[in-house]
Length: 250
Ligand SMILES: [Zn+2]
Ligand SMILES: [Zn+2]
Picture 1 (spheres, rainbow, N blue to C red):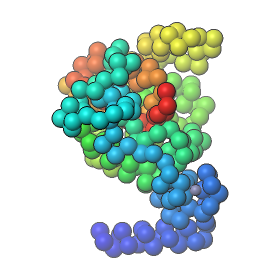
Picture 2: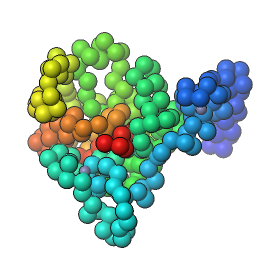
Picture 3: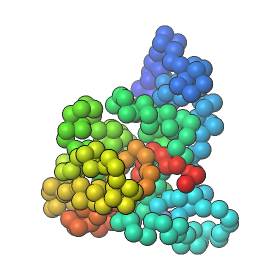
């Protein structure tokens, strides 16, 4: 184990010397390949959530003020009351190194070790630590064919491996191509169109499970809420959501 780790870090150091990679934010060199597309300095300047921030317990939206630790799970923003998931969390703000990592993941099916560690830390905190199965937000098969991969599945499989949870890419299917429905629609129309977009293929697989749904960014919550509704209707006990990032100023 020690030898493998030593060899790995030696290999990483060697690669960084032979093929130095430029940070996609500041242009400086990325000292360690495990950091992915951003350098250590840019990672330090990116806001990650440590589990101590005051947030809406349900959707993870940042809140302000102070509160006694034992009342933290009673904080609600009320914007998410209609959402079907139990609780949603993100590793940090959609800015800096996290945003750069999300954008890179749309082009290439690769996720850095540093990001996997952040995801694993976030999953390890309550209430996401109750999850028993990892399921990525499904892309419509036509869309997946266009892109060549599903970025949510890349994130989900790496996380599942890291935290030793089963990874399930077959249960949740997207039956409606969102692109065809979204043009010219307002927020409510989009929410309604995505609500019926997901189907659970093998309800017996997820019955009684506490599912962790994975996506790259949490924006309105409409997509993950639609996934959660389908999974709960098919018999899942609880549905949690984990994303790489979420906007903090909205
Ligand atoms: Zn940088
Ligand atoms: Zn909320």
